[in-house]
Amino acid sequence: MRFYEFASAIKKPLTPDQAKIQGMKNQVKTTQKAIKAEKARQKIKAGQAQLSDIR
Image (cartoon, rainbow, N blue to C red; front, side):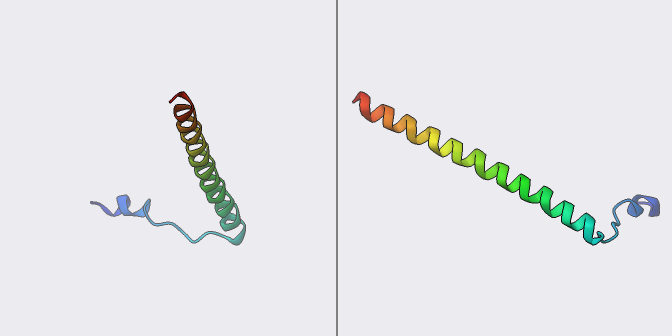
């Protein structure tokens, strides 16, 4: 690799304001994943209940 290829990989530390925004973005992503997982769990539970009612 050449020197200029490494220059883009080096990141400066975030300012406190940027860190706060980045933390909020990460929190949103985590919450969205949790909501998606919970909806899937509820859908599976409803499907299992429906199957047990059929039998």
